[in-house]
Length: 388
Ligand code: ATP
Ligand code: MG
Image (cartoon, helix red, strand yellow):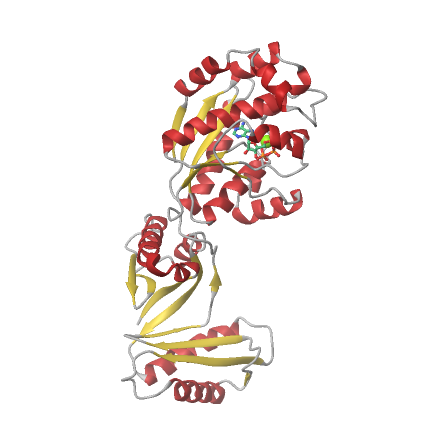
């Protein structure tokens, strides 16, 4: 007997000819997610992945739930193909299940699959025989084929696998199968969620953060590093580009109309991020913007911000309410870090009455009041790169 974890993957089945490629990327991502767990082996057999040879099951399960492309996993017993052995483990699983339940009567069904046609019992017979033996041993059990408390799965393949838990995982597609995009990562709640959503669709991330030292502290930078680190648990390594943004902000502050500051800043961020993206081989930008959330996210403001760059900008949260974004942030584990109260570069230079309906021609005129090209070049030259 050995304990293993069965891994099910979803959408990559849809990809026809690309399937071997998607499987290869997913397998690599699984191995990377488990690399710190000693001894663990990841195998592919008969169109499925298995994890074997681990001592800390909880750690393996925890890591696998975050790998995009995995739909669900099941910790299972891997047994010889012998019906008495199967019965023995089925009884053990059932005993545990009953002990952990509050109910007086428990319903169950056995679901069997026989991939190995040489096994002498067909799937119907396995289910019926095993169900019968369990009913005889545990008087608190009843069969319910429609809505049971527990489904006991028996799969007879090269070995027999028996399990009842089906742990839902992140879903989505393997990171790296859909190119790369540059995430504008602030220390707020929204942008980590936006990055997570795009990574979930198989897109690898590179991150860009604008830092306004000394207006923003080292602690606020640490916070962003921590957010990026949390994202790496889902999408593997991330190169975080910390861009010194103070000079540009000061120039804008001194030379441009106060009410335009936010939108001007947003446009410089987009332009710089686009350059970083090009260097990194990323084809699109990602932001955490959502319509109407703040003055710089009215439809008119978004239009003007968008016009700063030629690259497509992915805004996965565009139609989300804040509360829904907060819920995702909690689920993926970024929320607690995002709400730490360190200052953000945008809050330092925020105008008292930001324009909510900026006009592109006016904004472009204001941009000519500073030496934007030189300032952007200087910012790009002084980027600090942090590998996570
Ligand atoms: P968030 O919670 O992500 O900070 P927000 O609601 O505070 O978003 P804004 O401050 O208007 O919104 O920023 C909109 C988007 O611009 C952010 O989601 C992020 O993608 C990007 N952004 C803002 N500030 C920064 C920054 N300092 N560094 C990198 N990107 C930033
Ligand atoms: Mg913000």
